[in-house]
Length: 384
Image (cartoon, rainbow, N blue to C red):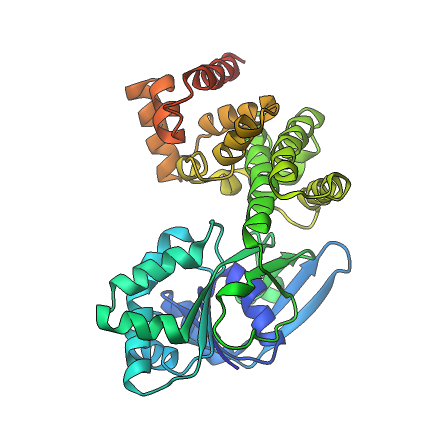
């Protein structure tokens, strides 16, 4: 199995790339960071430090690396069996041109073997969105060939991979938590599903996408935002604060009630899933800053993301949502001089007012009473 993974950062090396390497794939990382590419290409191995329960050090061997925008990348796409990404939601559109050129070269070479592309990003149906970018970059007469031979497979991914200093002074080494989850949509593959340990398939992917978005992502973000307000520096410190923990668990319970109604999840099993996530946030070996986890607040406050989408679900099913409102108000309170979105949010709040900003950013034009609740909680937080 010939695999190309776009994104050679910590998540790429510590999660998806590692699973591909463990599956004995012929693995090539593609990235725009030339020094990183050069070191991976030269060294061809690195360590993954798994921390928490069952802590261990695992070696990843026999990898190579190329620049994402190179002719070599286009040539390798033409020959690959599977392509994965961990580049970030805002970068997917930027790699579409390279993918399109590779698929054109694949068609020109007469390669009829099925190939699957899986975007492993923190977003809903990221691969489907990537597909549209790729098709726009290709001649329309090749769209039918792509539909026949290339699978664009949506996925849900979950593993905390914080930035941190490398062990043994090797910048390629990466630290990850024990827990990982990679779930793919079995209905979207072309050809046989690849045999990759740690990759699970389902025909009902949206249930698992929303389970992760409404639980891990919702809880992580609210922990960060409340943590910063309380003066905590790390996610662990924040979640060990009883007042913050109560709100975070309450918000995940509210969003979980939506999942139970929508997908029929077992309430006892979902409660255990929430407790597992809280335990993950407490991991003393993951020194994850609240400022890092809280970054890009405008995206996280948008209608289809981790705060407003579960809130919409509570309205749909007539469920409580007070803790989610506290998390949203805390997100509006997030401040970071290193984050352009945080700066833009401050400007919007100052120039347009809180009510208008909440209405527009969160897409709540049809819920003025709910907007008023969020504004009241936000204003109360600013007075403390």
